[in-house]
Picture 1: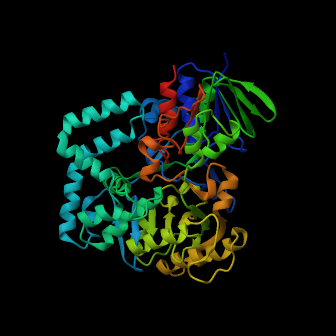
Picture 2: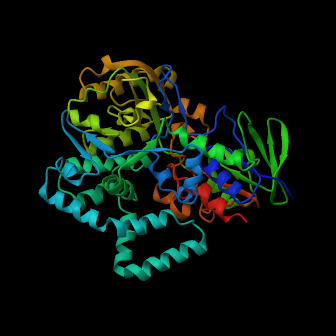
Picture 3: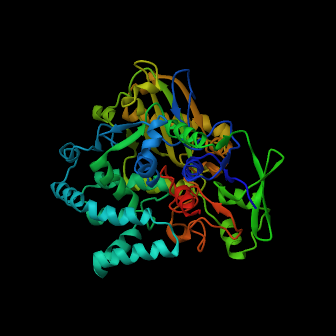
Length: 515
């Protein structure tokens, strides 16, 4: 059968796959059910005219450092891709007025540490980071296929030896709390780094979660962070232009309702009631949606069972704010950082996660406060600012309130009082904060899913990254390379290895494997 490669979903993975395939002569057609491309990498005026808010993803560091950009960066730049470098990537606000921050100036970072021993440990970690990053980064950049994985493991063992290789393996299985308590003295520093684990569904005591706090700490220290000039959608727009320049098409408002397959092979899709033939289909879908579109069964019992049991992370609530001036942080240096995590202790983070998993609205949700206009003023009118706030983590289905104040058990009713709880937490760190707000839009977990069905229950990472659902097990053992039991049907997106983030690894891996 001949025909174009059909890509379901114009998220970052779908667009990257389409762009790479188009440069190699494939005819590509991207079908997106929403009105605009981008998935979680979109920017919209969500509050007031002239205030541009990143709908979900703000940090584009993974995209900037991706294998796709290494290969196609020059062409992307010709289509308008522009990054804004940030030397102060993140800080942690703890007791009001107290903070710990990481910047690319090591002395500035260490000035916020309370322990001399921790300062030396930090320098030691920086010294070994290039070698360790080569191993960990190499693993994250390796497709979960037998050949590439075996080659990577053999090369690593030959270079590191048995002892060091086992140390890396142990590290990959370690919880954030265990690694942090083994490494640092200061509870403040442990808190600041553990927060990164919750970005990928790793509460402090979840095995396998140490890797993300480590990578974000060291990468933030050595390289800083980048965001997109004018908004995260600068990446989406450049990708669409790249696809169209090579003769491909990105079709929005095009809902795929069925993936067609016959005798174990894919033959096309049905979109908006029209049958479209394709030589292959790349589906950027959450597992439950992939199974729905293929008719509920692939013919492989283990695959079907694994997809039906796929676990999503707890939800996220977003708050988008238009401000007439910067946040008046009590610790004024917090006004110099792109991300400010608000959470008083590592134990607070652990409690918050347990509450959300139990269906309770957390009494003190962990906040990720993004301040992009400090570095990119083009996102707001002159002198004004946008604030990007994630409340992590919250339940999609509410059974109660851990604080005993909110009686609502549906998000339509609970959204307003939860918004006030979030604002209270920021106000505590920044007295007078509410007076800076010109406009606001709250987005519940269910609102997130309504806007992007892949964000099941407001899960912004499209599936937990716990060890039982990561590496060779993402999304199902035997299918971590994105293939499915249906020949010609490939799964891409955050539910596939290497998982969530803007690195678009699964889309690029799949495109590169196609001949």
